[in-house]
Image (cartoon, rainbow, N blue to C red):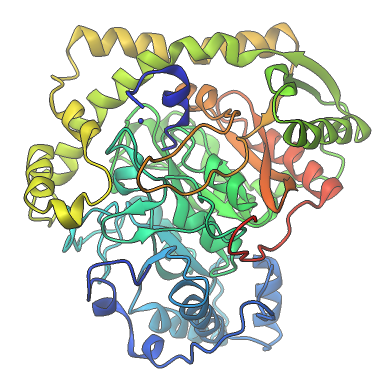
Length: 541
């Protein structure tokens, strides 16, 4: 998650492949990856798959220009050149040793006339808090969970395999999804080191889905999956200049994902285009008996979200604009104002609203909810995991015993705060849950009052400099909390850059309104065309 909301509200006292312990990743690399020539000129960046979409990849495989194996080999070479050397992004924490064999199987099926769908043979990266029942570990970036090789896929990974995707590897993240310390650096984990922002390397990629965002932005994969509690898809997507969707909680199953909050957690697509995000969103939706909330919207499995990709999707829409962000950094506000004018130009009616004024007071309650639910959820996950630690208390003790490697920069105050909480029957928790989830009524009432189709805002401000000593700092804008507390859908789309730093435009609405949001986000994307590849600049100066 992104801790900036808690910094702003005062709820907290402050909230490379080469960087990892020797052998942690190398042990899982395939011989094919080790043999790849890493002498790649990333500054010229003539990678043949740059900015390619899933549909374009399918066309090239159909015409025989590429096979799934060839695509996988190209992405592995790209990872070796960009992630493990060159700019050394540290976005990929582990390569799947079975990636090429999966690709070979998909090629064989294609030759036999069997196509599973639009994801058939498409290489994808997965955030390292999502179970994959293979040879890769699932650790949430924590050395305490090193060796946790699970036997069963998370439900969304089962769906991904059924769709024919090639699991390329796992991405780095903010350790424990950025719920470990009050002064952590987003994108840092004890297992994976610090992920860099591919736009400007000494800038932060945000968190907690930092690796997924950086990898997609840098064209290390076709598409990726991240997860969010509060901002962990939206903020990294905005910082890295990509499209991110945080679905309604319940659209995608959460079983098999290391949790923070049963109320707010969800995985979601992270891609370079709205089209690819829509495609992935529909492919992984489904009812999972292990996650009862997925039964709330029975028709979701039948939705093809690519049907909402309409050029004129903004025409006739009434959109509420968060007016508090019309003040602040003049360069950032200017980009926001230009985006608003583009919404108008493409047929939207704009109504200024002030949603954050009503939802900010809920932040204290949300923080209480997350502490209780983190303890409960992590203890349940660890009790059935193959890790050496079986409780949150044991994680804390492991970190203390291995402080020089597990906590070299910042400590674990949040883990300790969570471990001190009681059960989900405590009044402190139940009262806080009522307050934080009242965000649903606030959003619903505002949309009904103004007859809105969506609420729109700047996603977050400009990327901060990475600081392992002092941690993250507030850059002045942050819009993830309302939809996060409500469990409502949230989409961010690139809307421009300031000094090569990306800024996203957010669209939110009520539960299971992903289709309508995709319609508007796609229309804005096609009208603005603000997604540009990163330049891997060393610094802004």
